[in-house]
Structures are given as C-alpha cells and as structure tokens.
Length: 138
Image (tube, rainbow, N blue to C red; front, side):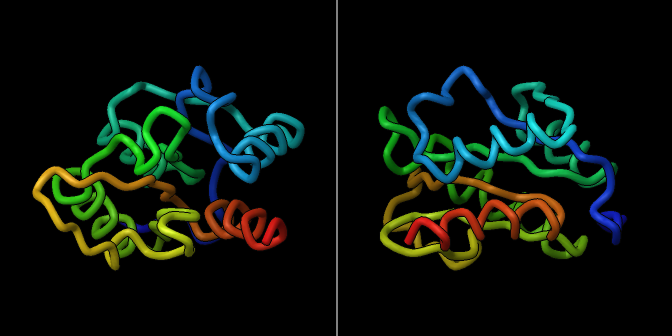
C-alpha cells in the first residue's frame, strides 16, 4: 500500500473542536483546506483516520494545543508505529513545530514511557503544505 502519488483526495482529518487552542499555522492550514475544497473527515480513532488517509490521500493532524503543550498522543504507542507505516508507504510524518524545531516523529527521543508529541502525517503534498506555513511564520 502506498500513498497516492498525486496526493489523492483532498481530505483533512482533525478534531476541529480544539481549533481555537492550536497555534496559528495549524489554524491557517485548516482554514485553507476549507477554502480550497477539502473534505473534513474525522472518526476520532487515530488508526482509522490514518488508515483512510493512507488509502485515499490527505492529512491527519493531532497538534499540540494550549491544554496539552506536548500534544496528546503518545510517542511510543501511537506516534512511532503510525509514523513508520506512513513513511514506509511514501508519506510524511512530522511533529510540526515541537521543542523549538520542525522534525520527524521518528526522531523524537522520549524520556519517559508515556511521553507525548504533536502528530501531523499523511501524503507529501498536504504535510509539506502545512509545514511550509510554519516556515513562513518563522
């Protein structure tokens, strides 16, 4: 299974109920998705949402927010396994801006078993577009 080479369907997957507590580049990206014909799809199960993203294209976003500065999903049980699958299928798995830099989820070094990190993963077209918004704000 591989991510669609052309980026696939225009689908974004995130819990928009938390939109107001996200950093500005994430807010801007979600607003741009709404304005460019993307469909919102969010089940609330990371595995289901990432599986759909892998099959059809798009992006899955579970960013840090004001309440959870390090994100909510755990690095060892959620971030690493899904990032490995995403990257092996030709996608991109990033933390977004985390601990002062933009990086790969697989490069996070957890200090404790339950450490958490923000998660942005999906097809290259969509993840790189979101990361470009971080870079333009720098």
